[in-house]
Length: 229
Image (cartoon, rainbow, N blue to C red):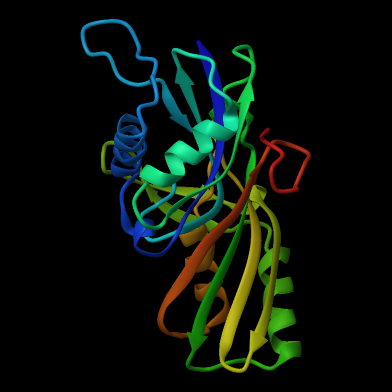
């Protein structure tokens, strides 16, 4: 049995598929490619295919990660080529590497994610005002948002400890945000939560929705793309 770590992109029309459909797309691609997938044991076996951190529908992913186990030891380049030829449009295999069976689980490794967000503003601020907006937002002692729990109950949550970086710039009337947020099994801040809180704080108004993209996923203490290898 061999374990493979895949870096892939989820863009264009593919960014609108759910996480469950993403799993199915990779499973179907592996079957079409003739890759000998390993399955779990038990009454309802399923492929040994795990993803680092689910993406919300509508958010593109530029450097996402997933692990797949095969019953045979196949060169990683062959696995990459086989999947790339079988995946639907919008899902792109960037690289595949074989990793040890003892390697930590991806979900346990992920600690933070870098995002970009762009939108057109109806009231674009000057450079100095935008700088003051971001600084004032980050200087708040708490950034409280409302979340629904599994019971459908609303609770308050302070997302400030999970905001590791935030910057903004204007390009004519387009605001471009870059941020690094807490994510993974030990905690998660959604980019949509940050944007909603920032827009409420700033008084800025958009023409249409933000275009969102996750640039990278990283373990604690590291911020370069590809560090989940």
